[in-house]
Amino acid sequence: MREFDGGRFRVYLDENASEEEGGARLMACAALFCARMGIPCPGEETLKRAPQGKPYFDVPGAPRFSVSHSGRVWGAAFSPDRIGFDVERMKARDWQSVAGRFFHPAEREMALAGGEAVFFSLWTAKESYVKYLGTGIDETFSSFCIAVNGKISGDALGVTFSWPPVPEGYFASVCTAAERPLFARAGGAARVMRP
Image (cartoon, rainbow, N blue to C red; front, side, top):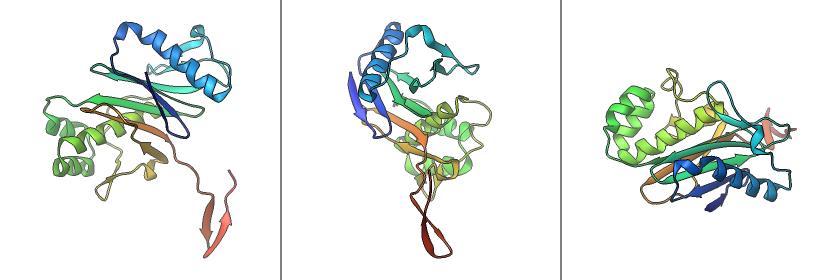
């Protein structure tokens, strides 16, 4: 199991995963995260699913998490706050058609100009965002846009995207709430923003 420290979150990756071990693997990662944070680890009996299917711990103060798997890679991202995570294996597919069906026009243009790797970067970022929201892929997937001037940005959505290291041939994205700036300009003068 590999661990990536993203500062405000941690990602755990198993590069040789089978689906049968999912619950035990999730609880092992939760125990690692909680030990690092110095908080009690919730028991497996507190694991629930939201109406849209997103799993969560039904206990106050429990860590938030998002799980994804593709091919032989399984991963989970943990945070004290809301989080979304997606991992995808690059595989032969008609990604241009997928971009045409599921992407906002600006994202579609960016993917077609940049190629398959850009498509997978956009896809994992978009999917991590809907997992962050807890909604999953639905008819609104193409209605929001993360392509800004040829780059991926969550600024308009109030989120930040991060790309944890993954094995070659895979792409992954973590979506977290954007950090509020410590300083803002008001009338030309900087003032401290309170959290």
